[in-house]
Image (cartoon, rainbow, N blue to C red; front, side, top):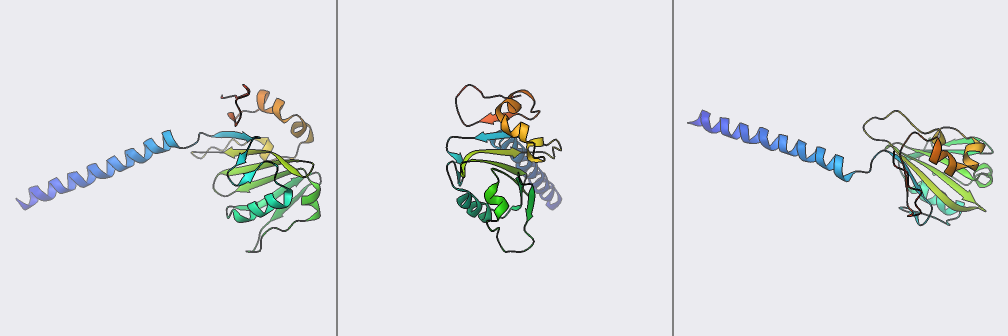
Length: 172
């Protein structure tokens, strides 16, 4: 009788475990953002608001514990945190209108400034160990950055999602 009861308990435990695994997989598939590039030009992304100054964006970057690297374009320079000391506004950060930040949790950011104010944020989300990344987040190519909408519409391999209803949404 004890063996039969233990057998039923074991079957119940295994069934419960499999049910939890199935639930996690369903949540991952249905509730998590798909891989791709997300373009924000209206309100911003989370705490990064459009029209923030470079100093304000840098303060918000410093609050992100997963961002340890900032790459700026024109002039090209890479800033890496090696201690707990936060990023400080440097001459190259102030001069550049393009900042690329790599996060350790699978999010990469591309901040585009115009007249020292944040004009647009591109966020690259990669899931399930995807290795294919956009060159927007690895290179400082002035031709691509100048015509970024054309590049996103015609040459980008990742899916692109916009925060506007302008009809430019492109889902591959």
